[in-house]
Figure 1 (tube, helix red, strand yellow):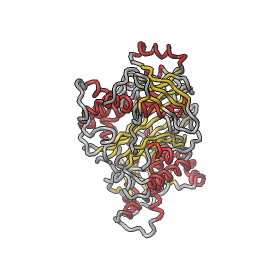
Figure 2 (cartoon, one colour):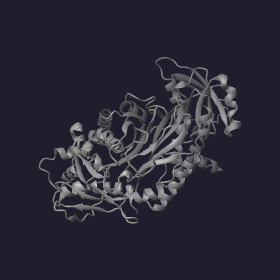
Figure 3 (tube, chains in turn cyan, yellow):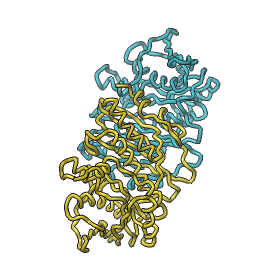
Figure 4 (cartoon, helix red, strand yellow):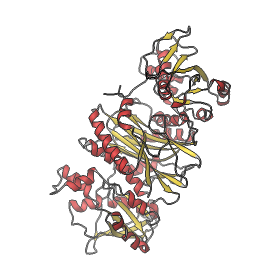
Length: 312
Length: 312
């Protein structure tokens, strides 16, 4: 196996487009845009916990960066720079070559300069730190939802979870391709996040599941919610995937009812479905925010399907 | 074991002093200082590779952040913000409590706001990303060494390696305390790094070993060097530690001979020894930079002691 330094040179060092100093010194150097704040996020992906050990390495490379790009989308930030730290077993070079091909494909797709990292031997683990820019004060937070706001979701959440269930033999999909693509090649909603600046009051990306991630918004905003999801599937894997499946990286956001027309105009501009799924309700002081899910007949559906908790 | 969210609330979330938005959203938000560039570095520490599994968790917490702070020192940057991603086995809460106590002690010591992170289950692995600031154009790079520059080292490199050898039974130290302190509680040379802005031509922190890290400066600067180290120990563990021992996090730097008096004035100001150990020589085009080590009698010492390479 080549040395750590040769590996970095060969696979982890690519030309940058908007960076003062990239890979190769004790640190990278970037020049932030005047008037912008930096939004920063880090995610660690562990073999067996976040991905199956036999996942296609090129898909894994894409997804490792994509889930971080999605955090920028959820904040309304333009992704700009990323660092990749990787612990690898005595991997074959061909595995690393494929992984980095997927990783850099995602970097190129979203205009991210990869400016540094670390490689070391160990059980397979990838840690990406990403940072983006947003004009000062315009980031989308979880804490801004207000009573009366409408709740919206992009795309079709639940497909990644259904794809995973198919792979694990928990159910069989007749045409699994789009579900597996949602699982392996998530498409962070960066353009939507940028369009929601000044429009959405709160936003989050669906990584833990729709109900769990909405719960994070309700907690942070100290409000409740009623969900009335158009076409809610009957009980079964499809409903479970929609309500509790993580890994889709769709954006869940709230916006004032007065901005309904502005939101409704976005799908045609962005080529991305947006569905209104509910309304923000008052919270009650001293009790956890309440989330009520209604079925097609307006009857409350019991919900105990919370998202994935790594230590729960 | 408490949930991921409870763990983060209890141990990883502390008040910040210079951050717009800390832990708890999809990303943290910081406002960079006008006129400054950001210096960014990431390091991954793996159990068994970078630390012994039975290392005291409070020491480990300190060191996990300190090695990253040291990268800021080596660039002449003021450390400002850090993120911590941690994969943990089914650890006891008391282990996490001790680890974070050491980690935040280091953050407090160097004025670092801890603004985000990630916790997940997996083989023990810590990944820190750190951000610092430096006035535009003033960062210390590896590539700036010029022929005739003097080569300097801070402190007493080699102590951490001797401490590790003592722990592993490879040799016995009569009074191991200061060596073990160097190994477990490295003191990043931030104040020195800041003082070297506009003074040093190149700098690096000694993490792989003095010869190996000097090699990085020579490679990046396309120059050679002659080392004439005062009091070079005879062959044995002490010499090995000095030349090839990593983990000390002293600063190795070059500066013009004309600035000798400025450098020589620093130890009294900083309370930190600085030793001149050699001179930058011309490189030869087309061959790797040559490093000549002389003994006390001016005779070349054969050197094949390169630093630690995680895949070599």
